[in-house]
Image (cartoon, rainbow, N blue to C red; front, side, top):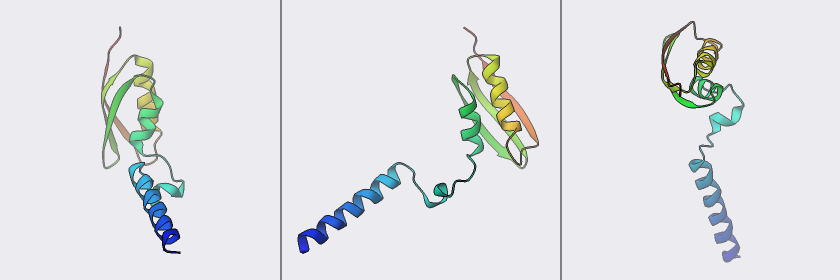
Length: 95
């Protein structure tokens, strides 16, 4: 009986550790909308864009491969609920 209890305790600890490592928080399980950062980064194919939000103004900084990705990032930010203005500071690195 003691071995089984220890096994279950270890299993629960392992599950909790995996949940913490993978970022599985109770708030993220609610099925809410993705963050603005996630939405913008998901919209582009190549590059990295950071987003800062001040009030209803989103500022995009970073770099992308082409103007298509820059426009996708701007559109994603403009389409995010609560964003009224987007400041574009994205550099395009055409090869």
